[in-house]
Length: 341
Image 1 (cartoon, rainbow, N blue to C red):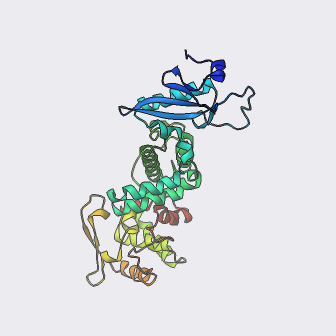
Image 2 (cartoon, one colour; image 1 turned 90 degrees about the horizontal axis):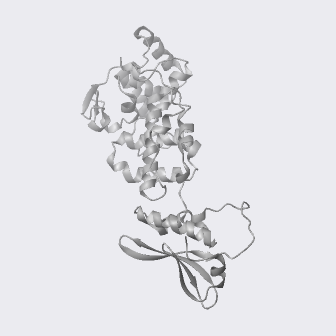
Image 3 (cartoon, rainbow, N blue to C red; image 1 turned 45 degrees about the horizontal axis):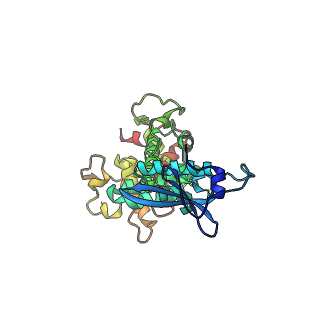
């Protein structure tokens, strides 16, 4: 039980008056009254202003809802609650001033934090991971939660991003889920979220996936006709990339991140560096007679100062969905990866 009373706060003389548990009422000679929290932070005493004293008898609660930590006028009861919350924050190793001023500083959006996460961590990733990180979030996450304040992204929001792709493209969905978690954990490390990304709870209420198996592959006898159809259809960057993928038995990511510096037309070789390969070992592929014309056609469309064979609209590597879209538009139930079989 505190030592102060509402009447005592109203009638207090100039000076410092303790309520207990680190809460003080400061009264100046002018009559102004403010609340102060005295707390130990990292072994040092700190005095933290909580706001002015609210002596009003009437209430307008409900007109504008302001979180208690960010109110600048406080009754005695409110000051005690705010004091206790910030004291607990200090005991947990948090900076009580940062907690008090969190919203006043402005919490960035999920999209803003994703960009910062990418800039901070991309040096630890392979080139294709660098490109895929933001590409997948731009395609699936930003339209739904990009404008959300990062501290307000909850399980329901993450499920809303994943639900449309959870069963349709499970591998991509798992990567998007992992990348959302990376962004939220980065935000937590910066003090923009009170907790890390949710983990197991995200899968609750998402559709149950079918047991894993081999990638759906087009029967070998149907591939020549499909390739003929692709070759005679209106030319798109996705169709050209898929044709090269089929001709070279490449993984989608290897094609999408391929660079002209890896192509040797004279020897008809594609030198795939270790960072492009799943097993992180360099690999050389012989370019067959069907692959060369595709590369020459793509070369005629090459963008200046861009070494990617298949750059997207913004100059980055194509998304994995670009190649899959070709099969979906043809209403075929197969995967790009299946052509490796």
